[in-house]
Image (cartoon, rainbow over the protein chains, first blue to last red):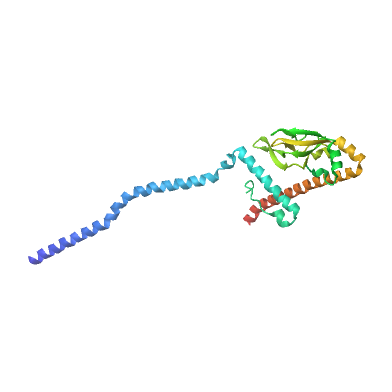
Amino acid sequence: MDMLVMGLCFTLIGLAVAMLAFVAATRPETLRPAEQPEQLAAKPAAARFFSERIAIPAAPAPSIHIPVAALLLEIENHVRLEQAAAESFVAFPSHAQLHSKTTSRFVN
Amino acid sequence: MEQKLLNGLSPAESAEVLALGTRLTVRSGGSLFRLGDAADRVFLIERGRICLSFPMLVRGQQEDILFEEKAPGETVGWSAMVPPYRFTLSAIAPLETELIALPREALTAYCERAPEIGRRISLNLAILVGQRLQLVQAMWMREIQRTVESRSQPAAAAR
C-alpha cells in the first residue's frame, strides 16, 4: 500500500513538474502574439517607406518641377562657369584646361 | 575712360574718333539692340554695364540667356563692322549705362582719310573678334567633349 501511495506521489510530482515545464516552455509563445501586432505594424510602415523612396527617383517629375526662374539661373551660372573655363583655356591652352570638369549643376 | 577699340591712338586721335559718335544713355533694364536688328553703329561703353544674351527655348517659352557681360572701356555691337551687318546677340543694360555710338559710315570714312588710325582701329577690332572666336571655340569644344563622354559612358558600362 505504501509503495502504491509513493508511486502515486511520484506520479503527481512528475506530472506537476511536467506541467510547470510546459507552462514555462509555452509562456514565451503566448507572449509573442502580444508583441506581434507591434512588429506587424512596423513592417508595413517600413515597406511604405521604401516604396516611397523608390517612387521618388522613378518619377521624372523633379526636373520638370524646377521653376523656370531657377532653371534660367542654373543655365546662366553654367554659361558663366563655362566662359571662365574657356577664358582659362584661351590664356593657357592645354588638354587639361580644355577637358577640365565643370561643377555646374546644369550638366551634373 | 580708355576704350579698348582705340588702343594705340593718341589722346587727340581718340578724341577725334569719339567726336564721330553720339553719346547715349540706356536706362536700367533698357534694350540697346536685339538679335536680328540691322547693325549700323558700334557702341563703346563709358559707364555702367551691358549684358549680351541669346534666345533659348525653355519649356516652349523664349528666354534670354546671358552670354557675356561688358564693362566700361569695352566695345559691343561690332557686328556693325562685319557683313551682313546684323546683330547676332541681344544687348540690355542691367543698370543705367552710358555709351558712345559710332556710326559705321562715319567711322569707315574717317579711317579712309586717316589710314594709320584706321589700321590701329582695325587691329583692335580684329583682337575683339578674335577673342570672341577663341572663347566660343573653347566653349564649343568643351560642350562636344561632354557630349562624347555622355554618349560613350553607357556603351562602356554595357561591355
